[in-house]
Length: 115
Image (tube, rainbow, N blue to C red; front, side, top):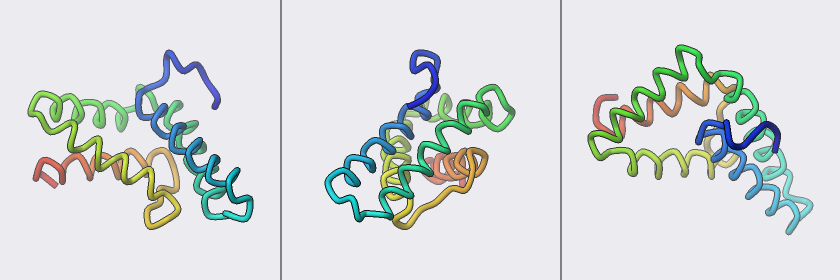
């Protein structure tokens, strides 16, 4: 992990946890190249997301999360986002931090039926 965890947005922490989980799979099976690639991409997304903090796109994401929190939809969205991260490299993908945030925004809207 890189960066200061205390200042990291929660989404960065979740990406790094998913990367660590994938790396544990590689430790258990060094031939698991898909998990290795997924771990590398998850960490890349975490690093890029750190840099996006404060951007218009990040503010939009936070506004949607706040709205979901006020309407009791946040926990459902968090499960969907967790599944997205867990499947990274195994059916889901985000090329960049921007693409990752856009995917989360779309998932958040779909979770609440506005997407």
